[in-house]
Length: 186
Image (cartoon, rainbow, N blue to C red; front, side, top):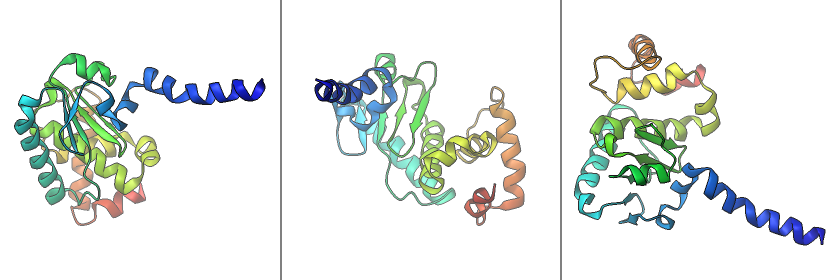
């Protein structure tokens, strides 16, 4: 009897995670109501596929040429509706990066700098590891993403404006060539 209960418990864990921790759905978005046109782009409205591909390719090229080479292209889920965004647990966020598993872009984030920002987070996770990104100083993680994505907004909400400013000062001293070496020292 105990073995059966344990088996049921173990089988229920993935279902519970899928139901209650919505960002995990990025691992298998095709199980939601999305079309995964290829292994890196999933979308809820296939008629917007060309726009999604353009945003993806521009961001990938930009990040690789200005921040660093991405080893494994991230899976990006482009949501054109709030319903899609909520199915991945975005809440009020415009986009989210789930380690190296994938990125979710909400309807408000279909802009080059948002996709670049999330790809920079993907690169950070590749270079530093997910635990380190999670525990490293937020000014370096978020500041890098806001500054190097060339986010055009003149003023961000706090604490993100402070993070961006602090990163820019630090980056001027470090430079592009030593970026990753110096980040690892923090």
